[in-house]
Length: 184
Image 1 (tube, helix red, strand yellow):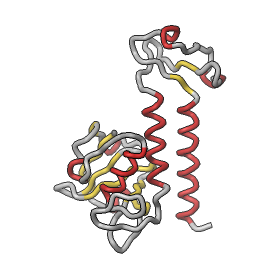
Image 2 (image 1 turned 90 degrees about the horizontal axis):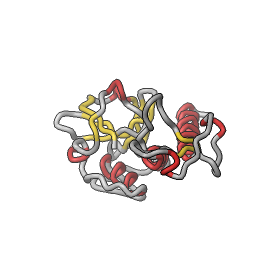
Image 3 (image 1 turned 135 degrees about the vertical axis):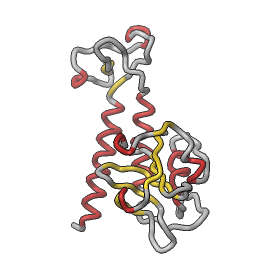
Image 4 (image 1 turned 90 degrees about the vertical axis):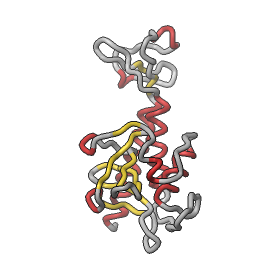
């Protein structure tokens, strides 16, 4: 099996696992009690079921990250990965061809999130993330001023629509001059 195919399958498997894990948990918003949210508290999150989802808590506070945000991030990553090999076309925003910002715009739109349309405008959307804190699904921006966007997929790799001579592909994060990153 070619290396890029094996890498794609590994990443795809990880995305599916993250999505399934996110669906198994009910996360109670901060300031509410599990009883008020209708969730059951179990001794171990590992035994969560559809009838009694686990409530994930820290030592003194309830985790406030909504399940749908975790699932959406994994879904957006899976959507972007599904477009590997799609043709590049300047100004295109899918579903059959993309430019860099069009790929991100289209993928997030599939889960109900509307990003700005250009890479420069996208670089101001969401929460800033340090390069050392990147997580799969984060948007990564390149050049100064910003003129390119990709999605971080882990292990120092990004997926992006690069140029007219290349389809949507996976590249090394280090292959372009890093400008910043955002978490949507």
